[in-house]
Image (cartoon, rainbow, N blue to C red; front, top):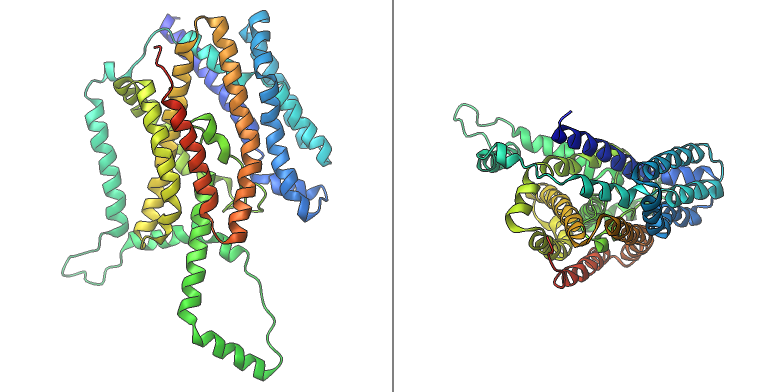
Length: 422
């Protein structure tokens, strides 16, 4: 097997290990609420235990990240990775068989404490990737045509959703895209309104019934517009939080914010949020490598962190835009956040690797970086969940978004003091 083929195989295996670790952390998101509820916990305590079940895993990783880096220096990378995989298997089985909150939290804590693969996989990748592999070298004319293709995709989506038929023989032809858009909005945006609908008893007193009818007729449009605005705003807020991905350690704050809700934030189907995340899979092996090699890891990192605060500030205002542009802009907002997070995560890994003076130091540096990232992922759900609850109670759902924007702004300011050692 050639050297390049062997490196590719090793990177594929490392990618699988990293994906397994990510799944171990996120796999309980869809059923956290129902699992805690099945333990006969009071409704008042479900929110606390849901956040604890998520946070304890990453907090355990925070405590032992540097320790596992030292262990890998002593016994080697491969044995340490195998220990992490085996402990992940034990964690999954004990969590699935748990019958109480204590056992469930203990199993998650065990999985976090004995999971060395967060920083170790990144170290192995840095040690393997000695030969630059660029798709643009083999296909020098791919990039301009890829850009044209992306514009064509965007144009196709807008034309399908908005463009009306102008043929003189088809004046009443329906706009299929608008119909599809309405269906998507019913499925993804307003599902929480219909899901929480209840029946109200009829008034027994005819006079009371007549009073209710008169009250409804006085301000029907005002009440409808208020309900419509509240529903759209809540749905867009939850979509935004669900699709938040790690860019900088500060931006890990939003993970798990809505796990205390029965719907997990907007939907009870885990696949509903998968489509926007697919953007990250599509651009990571193509656009992002060219972008980083063109402008440099540090400059790209600063750009991403500088744009994140503005996006968090503007996101709550998107539902006020008239339909159908509202839905299109919300999708673009989600896709841009995913793309920015992918760029930021890769740039941070490159900057950390280039800073290390040796491979042994790289292990410990990656362990420390992964530990602080896990700390943010453990504290973030608890604090941002409280912010979301405060926003709901006060009627200002901009609070959690603007707070996250302030946290991202701190990361942007910190990036101004970074140096590129590559």
